[in-house]
Image (cartoon, rainbow, N blue to C red; front, side):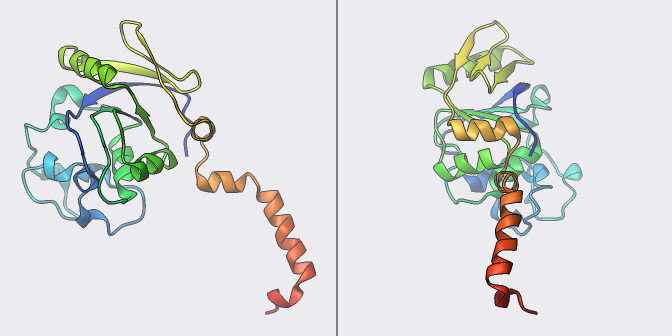
Length: 213
């Protein structure tokens, strides 16, 4: 997992409450567990005018011109601005996989479903909870400021707007440390590789019959 320290990105607004994981990545795309390749099908039912299935060439599919992420001004957006209870519904980890593969690094919302919130951190994204008044202000700024970008400083726990206004945010210290160092669950385990090898060798000496061919 890549380290997350400071990040500046274009903001895309998804002005909806209760966006569930089936909207983020529909159920027919859950057959793969490779973690990659889900970006073209993120928000599939909102993004395209036809019905999507695994293996389709999304570059030839008709786009929904009314869906915000299809608008030219938000191409390349890496910060998603949304509303309350984002990521509700089923617990599929494919939802953060799809968002990350789409290119999002940061999500700003009033609240999240717990499992989605946890899975986002585990996949290198930073989901931040902001007060409703800050979210409302950001929606207004994004609408009237093409190219609106934010800088997120995880170490300092600050978001800086283009006008210099700073928004402080809270983040769990352990999750913060993991993102700053690029540690996913496997990375955390590998930090103790020497102790694990020592334990395995000790087990072989103490209980050799367990390892007999």
